[in-house]
Length: 176
Image 1 (tube, rainbow, N blue to C red):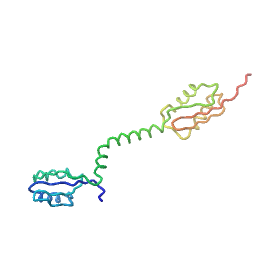
Image 2 (tube, rainbow, N blue to C red; image 1 turned 90 degrees about the horizontal axis):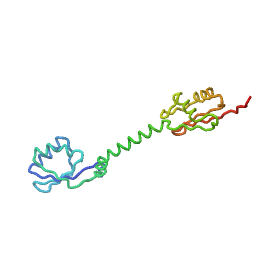
Image 3 (cartoon, one colour; image 1 turned 120 degrees about the vertical axis):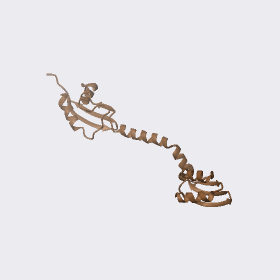
């Protein structure tokens, strides 16, 4: 069994032997050559080499008809016809991978006196806006939030998928 796509061709014309010799000289492999009559032969050839035969067909006034498609011809033809679909799917996959390493959501937990907008604005001013590439370590931003806001006693920042999670613990402020 052959693993490539090939076709069985019926050759008709007066110079079929010359055509076969020209194909051999042009490194076009033909096999299973069968003599049917003086003006008719059957041969097998790879699908990819069919267009290479065109000059020899014109030169020898030989005509070919595809009598049978064999091997993995249908699979190869299907993949060739649907290669644009594979291109779209691969581009979509690459786009999803690129988008999945970015931060698209900022979620804040534990804040009572500070508003979410205040913290998000501060995070955006420190070069961590929506759509930026996520980092592994946000210790510098944790320290910065603890130093900037006097109510914040403890801050933890981590990435969960495409979400930047900010956990805050606020201290109790006693009236004087």
